[in-house]
Amino acid sequence: MSQPRKEIFVKRRTLLSVVAAAALGAATMFGSEQSARADALADITSRGTLRVAVPQDFPPFGSVGPDMAPAGYDIDMANLIATKMGVRIELVPVTSANRIPYLQTNKVDLVISSLGKNPDREKVIDFSAAYAPFFNGVFAPARVPVAKAEDLAGKTVGVTRGAIEDLELTKLAPSGAVIKRYEDNNGTITAFLSGQVEVIATGNVVAAAILARNPPKRPELKFLITNSPCYIGLNKNEAGLLEKVNTIIAGAKADGSLNAIAKKWLGAEFPAGI
Image (cartoon, rainbow, N blue to C red; front, side):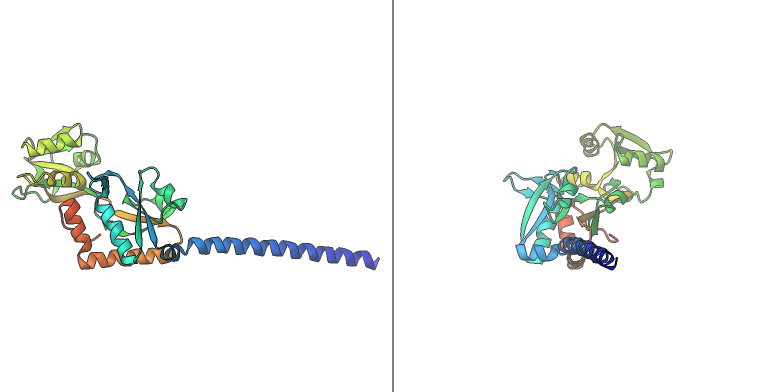
């Protein structure tokens, strides 16, 4: 009777050893995967190339120039980061729909594509510090005395019908303001340049498009309606890469590099507080 019990004990111990070994192997494999994912900065340094997802159809953040080369705020930012990291840049054109999947499937290391932060996105990727302003506001020439919503009383304000700024302005504007709605941004721009309206409510990207025409009536920001800065996206648990990118952004804010990019592409100073 003692022999069978001994065999059973040996078999059980062997089985437990196999299970433990399998569990250890799985844990080691999982840990290795996590370590690999968490060491993207080392991968970039070893590869000598930083792969960045950038927009190709959203000026002034990113578009294709006459020479067929990508150009824009986000492209300059990607180049700045690669230069500070001491690696080559590989620009990967993306759309709004595929920019995060490209990151999650390791086609790129970073997303620099006018990316806004929201709770749903924060569940799947991490974000750097803000690197670019993106907002809707009220714009008018310097001579027009507007500093807050109440100052729009007696003013004619142009806005694109159904846009975020239209919805928000409807809530904010005093009863004495005359709001003229246009079917698209081009209509709003034309109304401002032709003098049909003296004030416009629009995005800073549209204001930059007006400034690019170098018109005699140059819009300047009077006050914000909504504010949603742009952030750089990167995969979760990439602490080293996140710290490196944030250090570069902080340095670019301090030494004026970001201000130069903002003035070049948005026609305005880099705003304080982002």
